[in-house]
Amino acid sequence: MQLNNQAIEELTSILDVSFDGITIANGEGIFIRASKSCEELFGVKVSEILGESSLYLEHKKIFDKSVTSEVLKTKDRVTLIQKTSADKIVLVTGIPIFDKDKNIEKVINISKDITETKKLKSDLKNLQTELDWFKQELSKRNGIDNQKITYKSAAMKQIIDTVHHGVNFDATVLLLGETGVGKGFMAKMIHSLSKRRDLPFVNINCGAIPEHLLESELFGYEKGAFTGASKEGKRGLFEIAGKGIIFLDEIGDLPLSLQVKLLHVLDDKKVRRIGGATSYEIKARVIAATNKNLKEVVKQGRFREDLFYRLNVIPINIPALRERKEDLPFLINMFLENINDKYETKKYFSENAIKLLIEYDFPGNIRELQNMIERLVINTIGDKIGSTNIHNLIEPLSISLSNKLGPLKETVEAVERNLLIAAFKEYKTTRKVAEVLQIDQSTVVKKAKKFKISLK
Picture 1 (tube, rainbow, N blue to C red):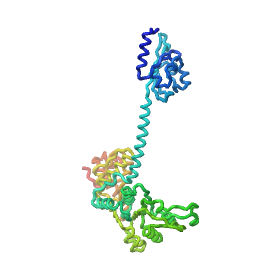
Picture 2: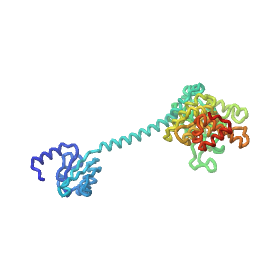
Picture 3: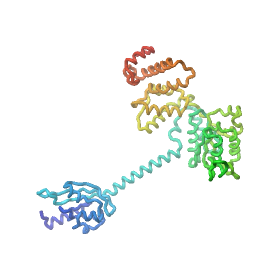
Picture 4: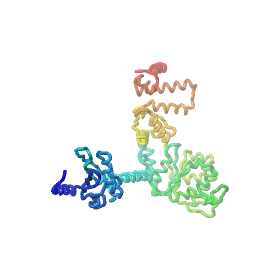
């Protein structure tokens, strides 16, 4: 069908007012019409498009993939994304127009600029990456998160008040308490709240390093100071800490020979590397920690009294969990929430399970509590963590820690009885108890009768 001049003018006007790029190619892929907006999309004049084939324009890199050629090849509608010589990203849909003999007479391409959309997606992705990085850095700088307010007991309130009061004094801090009460956490908390928060926090366990290596770790050495020494020498941890904080964990295990040198360092604020001729100034704040009763160790002659007094300027005695039971519900919820987030789970404790956890003394303190909750989240089938799950962990622990072990048969029967009692409290029926314990219902009935457990 031939178009008259008026129809051609109307078609050209429609093409030129369109925001989208529109081109029309004939059955051989030669472009016969193009809207004015194509110039911005493809970076060439309309006159450079008209009369040219789609393959030629693809070869000239006006666009990287020809929609027209794909339509002619597949004889069907095609949509793809093009990159153009104008550095645009364009979503193009090619529509075939057939004649009465079902041959392609024309191909109409509609091109939409999605450069900004793609850029926005890319910017959003980059922004999310930056946000994640800032969150991580904020967490690192804070040193502690929600845990700093996870307490209710008067003892912990007094400790937190002491920390806030003394955080920016340069005096030494001595953290005391049983293994697992959170002395390392408290040291990091002091660092994160202090004016030294952006400076190094250097941690060394005085009981984990052999005595003959500990001095060189703490104070460093010059090159060739001893056999096997590095040719370049080595900076000590006091030197590495700079104006930050050095945390001397398990200070009660420090050998007497090093206690003398540490005392001089704390008094003189200077230290000399092994084999060195000159001293360097110490500017780091010292936090020490121990699970020992240092006063008793002093009496036994295994810890210098003068060093004890030098360290004991701001003493913080962190009580065991069994001495602050009122903190347990908050700690349980905090650890459960953190571990659920870690593993993307939705586990929760039954009321009886929480009661059992609160009744337990946790000889390993906070470290044991955190470990136990993580084990329960991982090993419990289903979302509900019940009292039976708690008994499965606590009963074996209680037995292993008991000094009154009896014959194996009696001990096993005691565990079975306690486990069944807890299961009936939680699940009420023999069917449900059997299902949870993964034994036959008849076995549950027999054992309940044997142990004289009421089924009502």
